[in-house]
Every structure is written in structure tokens, then in C-alpha cells.
Length: 111
Length: 115
Image (cartoon, rainbow over all chains, first blue to last red; front, side, top):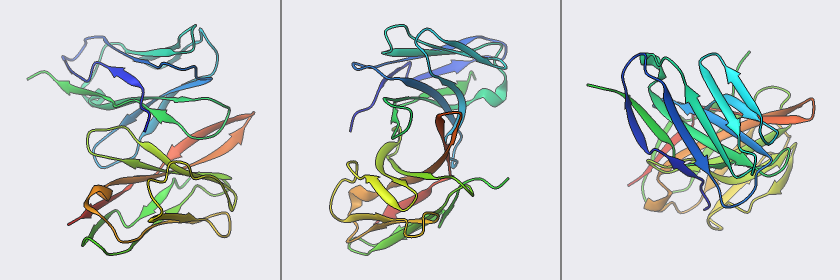
């Protein structure tokens, strides 16, 4: 099935660093969402974006809905150890209906 | 309040067996979705219900997969004659319209292993 292009695939973080990841699509979406998934759990919604150009924050997380409606990015500022996990972008074409997910960005702590 | 719950959390099936996976959505949530997540991948859509009506089943990979939600609440995903490629985590999500927006809240998933 279709999946969005998400990058990077994985990254290592040191506590206090800022983190960026992005997601692109060949087609337009009307909603972009960012989820975090911990091992053995389902995805948890972090940020939802509904308008092209929209910039939304949730604590240390900031996400933007690209003006072409074909991309989105997520920034995490001043990372902390509990930020580790897998982050997924997801797009939706209408106001409801199924989501199309990226393959995920795995955040790990630098050894 | 209680979130989406799924049972069993883990299921091991021998190739050829039938399995049934249950989803209890958040109370009052009208829409319910099933997704399949293979190892190292993002979730992929299987099917979608609004109340008891199955509005979209375009993601079901074969006719061995069947989902129902007879009373518009609990849903069951059934897989007949399981194959090894069915091994995955099956996620259920429910959503409620709020100010015209529907956002999906996921359960913990059922990890199915077919041996």
C-alpha cells in the first residue's frame, strides 16, 4: 500500500539537542498528523495540522503543514531521554477517513 | 476515561487456523478503523466503519480478511486460514467528530504471529 516518504529513517540524539524530521508525498493531503509510538503500544497523537502553511506547537514540539500540501515537518527542541521512540507522519485527504502513514523515524539516545 | 482496548494483546496461530481479534472503541466514538502494521513499517489501512456500516474495506488484503461491527460499538477482525504473511500488529482506532474534525485514537494493538 501507499506510504509517505519520511526522513530520516533513524537518528541518534543527545539530551538537549534539537531534532528535525520531515515527510513528503506525491499527492495533496488536507490534514497532516504526527504520532509517536513506543514499543508494544499504539501510536499516540502529538500534533494535528489542518491548513496549508499552519504552524502548530505542543510543548517542545512544533510542526508545520507545507504550503504545497505535500509535505510536513516536525521539530523537537531541547530533547530529553523520554523523547526516544518512533515518530510517524500521517496524511488524510478528507476531514475523515483513513490515514496514510510514513515508515517512521526512530529516535535513539547517543551511546 | 478509558481508551481503545484490544484483545488478545498477543496471538500465536498455526498456519491455516482462523483467528478473531477484538476492538473496544472509546465509548461514544462513531468511527472505527483497523490498520495492519508490519515489522519496521508504518500502519496500513484495512477497513473503516461508521456506526455499524462498513464504509470502506479497500485495504483488506484478501477475502480471508473479514471485519464486522454489528451493533456499532465493538468490532471484530477475523482472518481465515492464516498465512505467515499475516504476521503483524493489528491496530484499531476510533474517532469522534469534534467541531467538524475527526481524529483517530489508537489501541495498543494485537500482535499476531503465524507459525
